[in-house]
Image 1 (cartoon, rainbow, N blue to C red):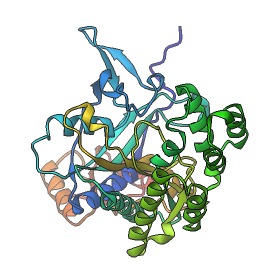
Image 2 (cartoon, helix red, strand yellow):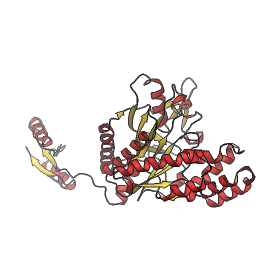
Image 3 (tube, helix red, strand yellow):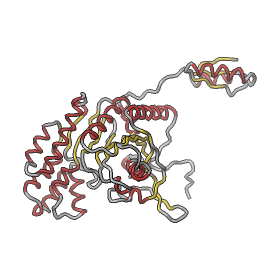
Image 4 (tube, rainbow, N blue to C red):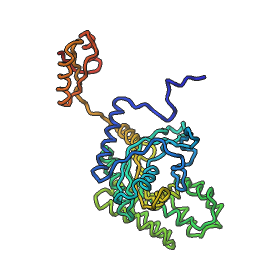
Length: 392
């Protein structure tokens, strides 16, 4: 039998020294942005009841969730995302608190990832949720906060792609497709798998009106700048629901553009997230040096009703580890260099040595008390660690 005590599970990692310091630095930058914008920090338990993540608007399939059994035989789950626990908190403990709620968080989430795709199973998410506000103003505020947060971390070369959950629904609702066929269609569009999409549409062409069939065929190709809205409007001119969604995207784009953030925006009308979870504006952020999306979010007006009174909501989750990876790939990852001093006292005069160390620390200097009695050992230790040496 293999002894695993010297190893860690696949999809996890130990975070050491400079990387750990950089991660804390990024988390603090994000938290400061949120707090200054009026968001209040919350934390949820690492363990939740599995039922929390198993509602009709679940964000992850059950096979992606780590599950275990408590001493009463109940199924528990490691927290798989942060939005769902926050929806639980908002629908129960915060019902009487003044709305809209502006909540923020930074916490680890746990998801089963295929070991071959290089993704972590433990992910640090940081994000915000605005609960109890309808309309595109809340969507625009969330997107602007996300852009400002990424800029504050030092990222510059990134794009936030905008879409709308209602576009896909407007084209397929009322069509005689079972859940599996609908999911295949959604995934082929979202992944821009044109071969799979054409095959699905060909197999089901008799179920669609010609205009919807053409729109679905073109949907994954509709990405770029604002010219995309005009192309989509022409394709979907007879679908009032789709046109309303396009108008919402246009308004959000205009709001973000009005404060000078236009260069960070793009449109992707073929973005089709989980079809039951999102209800309005959706978005994803990408940057050089990181393979997946570094930020994702959108409007989810139906989730909180599962835990109490229904409330409209919008928000985003940011991948903190992805930010660090991107900064590192672009040569922007650099920890602050503090002066470091070793205070040697030879096993005597601890009080004076401690007083000296505290004096240095107040000046912003890293001061370490020497663990050695022998002065030559202390000097050698200081040289190896690139520390200055001072003797009491």
